[in-house]
Length: 287
Length: 261
Image (cartoon, rainbow over all chains, first blue to last red; front, side, top):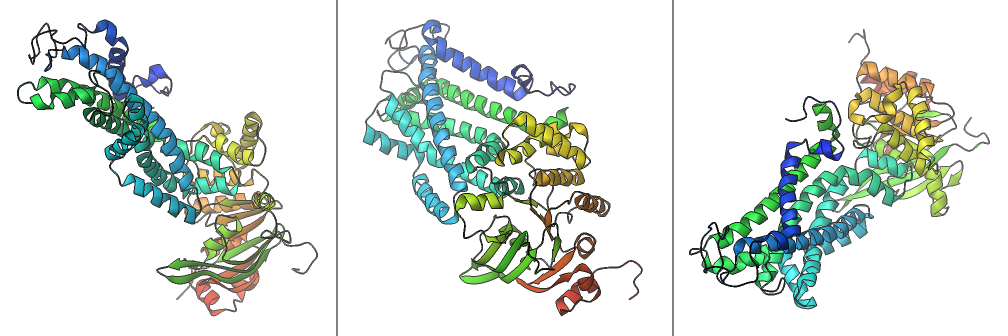
C-alpha cells in the first residue's frame, strides 16, 4: 500500500522498509532489541533489588508493569529479560538453522538408500518433543545458560533438517535442478546457488517458528532450574515464577507473555515481508 | 551407413531399467539397443509409459540403468573412471518439456547460462554473460533478456532460453524430451525451425509422441512400445511403409487435414 505507485524495485534497505509488514515488524523488533541493549540504563529500578515497592502490586505510575512476589519492579525485569530471551533465541536458531539446513539439504541430494537411512535417523530424533530433547541434553551437559542454548540449538536441528529436506527434495525433482545436474555442476553449488534461494523464504518462516519454540524451551528449562538461574530475569522464567500468582497478580504473566508475543509477531511480519520482496512474481505485480 | 568407421555419437546396447513397485519388478526398458550418429537426429516415438523418457534420462545420466551399456563415441561409460564419465556425460544436454519448471525462477537468464558454462570450467562471470547475450540473440530473444527473470517470458520464449542454455556448452548430444509438446501449435513450428537452424553438428535424441513434429525434424525414427524397441528406420521408411502393427496404429492415430473417413 505504500509503494504501489513506484516501479522502482524495492531491494535495498530503505526501500524494503516501505513494505508495511517489514516496517511494523522491524519497528517492534527494533524496540525489543533496543530495550535489550539499553536495559541497564533505561530500567527505572534495579531488576534484582527486592522490595523496590510493595509485593504483587498492579501496574501504576511508579511501577509500570507492577511488582512481583518479591517486590521487584517487573518493568525493569522484563527489560533485562529481553537480553537473555533474545540472546538464547537468536543463538539457538542461528546454530540450529546452520546445521539443520545443511543436513536437510545434503540428505535431499543423497542416493536413495543413504537418504532412507539418514531420514530414519532424523525421524527418530525428531520424534522427541524438542523441549524434552533439550531437557535430556542439559541433564547430560549440566545446567547453565550456555549449555541450555546449545541444547536448544541441537533440539531444533531435526525440525530444521526435516523441513529443509522436504523443501529441497521438491526442488531437486524440478527440471531446472536436473539441468544443472546434467551440466555436471558440483552438488554443493547446486544446493547453494540453485536450491537455497528457492527455499529461502520458507526457511525464514520456519526460522521464526523455531525462534518461538526456542524461547519456550528456554523458559521450560529455566523453570526447572536448568537454564537461566534465578535471580536472573528471563521472560520464560518470569512467566514460570508468576504462574503461582495467576489469579492474584496476572500482570506477572501478562507482560512477559506480551513481550514474547510481540517479538515472535515481529519475526513473522518480517518473514512475510521478506517473502513478498524476494518473490519475483510479486515484485512484478507491484511494479 | 551404420557400419562406417566413425563410431556413433551415442549408442546404447541392450539397455534395461526396472523399478520395484509393490514387490514386483516393472520393466521400464527391456533390452533397448540403438545408436545416434554424428549430427543425426533420431526420433523416439511411443505412447506414455513406453519408456522413451526413461531412455532419455538414462542417456544424460539422470537415472541409472539396471543393465546394458552406453557408449559415447564408441567408449563404454561404465568402463571409465568417475571423472572421465562425468566429463563425457557433460557433453550431453537436455531440453525439457515444461518450459516453466526448467528455468530457475529466482535467477536471471544470464546467470543461469553462466552457471551452466561455469560447470564446464568457464568461470568468469563477465565473459559468460557476454556469451549468454550472443546465445540469446541467436535464439531470437531481445538484447536485455540476460538481465531478466524467467517469469517475464512466455512459454515459447522460455523454451528458446532452454535451447540457448542447452547449446551453450557445445554439447555433442542433446536429448529433447517432449520439448515442443507443451507449446501452442504455431509456437511449436517456430521452436522446431529454431532447433533445426541451430542443429550444427550436434546429435539429437528427439523424444516425442507427436508424429508430425518427429516427421518434420528427424532423420530416423525409433518406435517404442512397452519398454521395447519395436521398429526403427529412416523417417521416410517409417512414415510411408511401417512394418510393425504398433507403428501402423500410431500413424493411423495422426489426424490429417482433409482426410476422409
